[in-house]
Image (cartoon, rainbow, N blue to C red; front, side):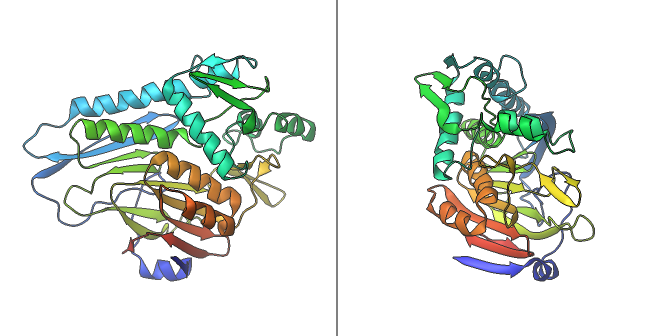
Length: 343
C-alpha cells in the first residue's frame, strides 16, 4: 500500500518531539511499567555516538556486565570493518595489492551482503567506492575534486571485481578500496541485538548515530516511538512524523546533512558509482523499517540512489522489508508497506 501526504500537512497534524543529534530517536512517553527501569549508556565509537538502552526489572541490578559486553562487541566489529584502523580486515584487503586476504567470517558476511545489494541495485550500491569517498572527503573538504583525479579514482569502482573464496577476499583491481561505511553499522546493530537477546534482554534499543535496532517493545508493552526529522527545516518544526515500531530495524539516509555548496549547487555525500558524483534523486530522505539492520542500511542507500519510483519496487521485493517513509524534493511524503505514524 502506498500513501502520499505533504510535509506541511503532517506538521500540522503531528506533535513535534525533541531529539538530540540523531536523525531520529526514541521518545518515551506514557505510563511506564512500574516494575521496569531503564538503563542507558552512550559512547563515541565507529565514528559516531552509540547509545544502548535496556529495560529491565526493577528488582534486578542494572545490567552493567551485559552493557559492557555489548559495547565490547561494537569495538570488536569496528576493529574488523573500519577502513581507517590499521590492521582491520578492510584495511588489509585495501592494502593487499590484489592479493587474497584472509578475514573474519563476520567480514565475509558483510561483504557478501554488500555484493547482493550491488546486484539488486544494478551496481548503484557499491562498496568499492573507498577511494572515491576519500577523494571527495565530505568531512573536511568543500571542493569538487579535480577532473583527472576524479576519473582516475572512478576507474577503481566496480563491486564485481570482489572475489570471495572460503575465508579470503580478493580485489581484481589492485588500486581499489572497499568501504563498508554504508552497511557495517546495520550489521553491528544486528549482532548487538543478538547478544542482548542471548543474555535475556527482551526490551532494548541500539542507536548507532541514528540507525536504530529495536529488541521487543518499549518495556511497557507499547511500541517504541521514533521521530522522523524534517530535512527542510531545523528550526521550529524539526520533525514531520513519529513512527511506532517494535522488534525491527529503523534506518535513515538523506542528502541534507553531509554536504557543501559551490556556485549555488549543493553536493552531498551519497555518491553515484556510475558517475562518481553525488546522486541525483528526488529522494531527500528515507526512513526504512526492516527485519534487520543490514537490510535496512542497504535498502535505504538504494532508495536514495535509485529515486522513489524505482526504489519502491526494489524495496517491496526484498524479503526483509517492512515499510518506508520517503520525503521527496517537492515536499511530498510517501509511505509504503507497514508504516504506523502517530502523534
